[in-house]
Amino acid sequence: MKLSKGFTLAEMVAVIAILMILAVLSTPFIKGYIDDAYNGKALIYMRELNEARMNFEKDYPGVKIGGGDVYLTECNIQNIYGQENLRLEPSILTACKYIKDREDIFDRYSFQLGLDAECCACSSPVISMKGLENAGIYAGKCACIDSLGRVYKQEDESC
Image (tube, rainbow, N blue to C red; front, side):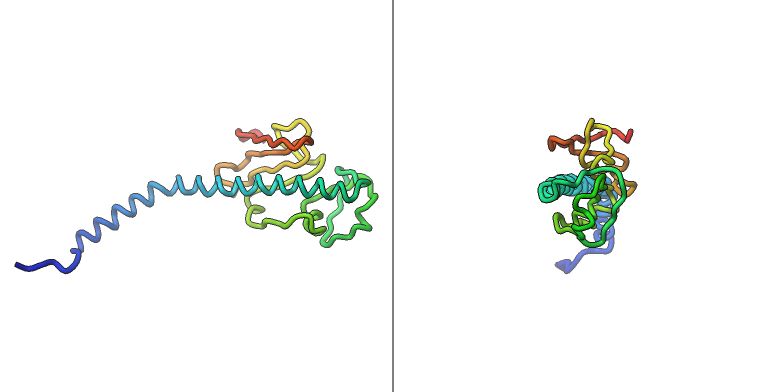
């Protein structure tokens, strides 16, 4: 009686074929989970932006958010403080060390602060985010935080 010491070629090909079929069938589900994870990160970042904005406004109460264009590469408070109609961008909050950038989500989502924030679900948005083309199932969908800190998500692509 002769014992087998391994697998035959046919057995190996069958196992590999089954694994490939399972991989092809599960790819859309895995991509959906990845999109959900990035959306969750973006929502957390949006809440962190709101917290950073509130801290900035407490430290510099004379700054009014909205209108105008000011883009800073470093935090120069002398240029910021007391300026009317400052457009507060996430880059200013980053430069002033109120928040750290999360560059891994910037290719998937755009963020807006202040009166320039746009979102379909909010009547008075303070911060909004919108899914870009790379956001997968969240492309074109938006979410926002209103002046009371409530988060609204837009589920359709009408934004």
